[in-house]
Length: 166
Ligand SMILES: [Fe+2]
Ligand SMILES: [Fe+2]
Figure 1 (cartoon, protein in one colour):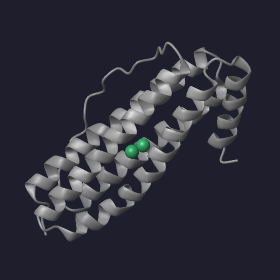
Figure 2: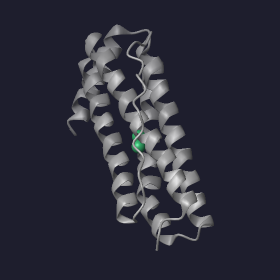
Figure 3: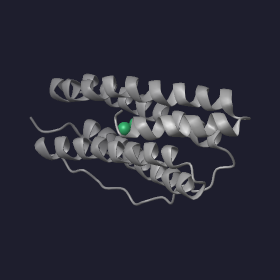
C-alpha cells in the first residue's frame, strides 16, 4: 500500500531532526577535540554516526514503501560551548526533541491506519529510551563534577571507553 501523504510528510520532518542531531553531535566532536576532551569528542562522534544510521533507516523505509525522502540542507552546528555541561544539556534537549518527533510519527501512522509504519517505528521508540537515558545520566554526571578538573578528566576517560563499547 502506498505511503499515506501525511505519514510521508511527518517522516520527512523526522529526517530533518535525525540529520540535525548528526550535525549537532559533529559540532560537539569538533568542540571537544579542540578542548582536548578526547573522550567526550569520541562519544559524540559515535553518536553522530548513530544519528546518521537513524536517518538512513527512515530514508530506506520510505524508499521501500515507494515514498519520496527529502534530504534536508545542512544547518551549521555550534562548535563552541562555554562549558561541557552546556553541550551535554543540549544533547539531552536534542534527544527529547527526537523522541517527541518519533511519537508524532507514530500518532500520524496510527491515524492513517498504517500498521507497517507503526511497526517500523517501534525500533525508534526503544532506541529513544536508550538515547534519553545516556543523555540524561551524562548531563547529571557533568553537572555534579562541573567544578572539578580532575573529575572532568576522569569522566572524559570513561566516555572514551564507552565510545569503544568497553
Ligand atoms: Fe536519532
Ligand atoms: Fe539520538
